[in-house]
Image 1: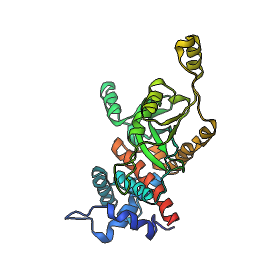
Image 2: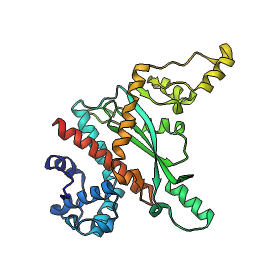
Image 3: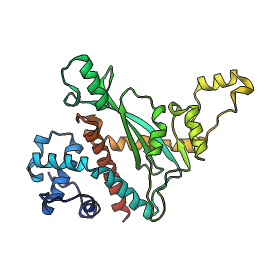
Image 4: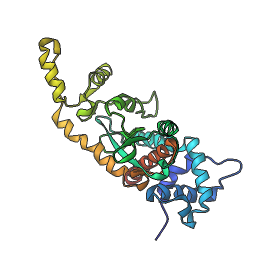
Length: 289
């Protein structure tokens, strides 16, 4: 079984984003170590179980932490999106937003501590409690071609609607000149995102809302008569394309390290998400090339 994670064409995109310090990594081992990081999150295996083809597991783990703290994975994702935008391949005519829950493995959440200390740690680690155990929630925005544009990570019990605007604000598509584009033409979401605040935000930014109205909201509006405002409508044809974000979530969770959260810190788990998103963009760019 081969341990190669990247093709030569894909590595050409990645290499410029990996810094080389005064004391390493050695350039000839850079690709080897980066592929080791991919292996770890793709398989969900433990660092200690990493195949020797990638080098010493402790060295690869330390390299991952350095890259994470330097923001390498997020910069790589943004750089690949910018490259796609340069080619005219980023489609912001419709952005779809949704969320998914990832259960935390006991390695990430299995410490035995006092209740107050544990609650404080869970809050800092963005872990929520439910019947199924401790969870984190990934809020994701997808473009019209099923590629990731932005992520927000919260505790598992966080409401979807409250993260709608923060996710939108994280969309930044750098072009060749001028300021980054941050305003899609239309935004689609399910009924969980139906709120006056979200709709008002989209109106202020002149973005078309493709969000159906909840039944209780419609009933309350009708009760108020003329004071309840105009009926809420949405483009049913565009709403059918909201499946792009659901398909994207399936792609993200093809990596076991995302399906189950093994990382104690949210920074490491977010780095995993940005790395997975980068690989999705990378496959697309090399395929179109």
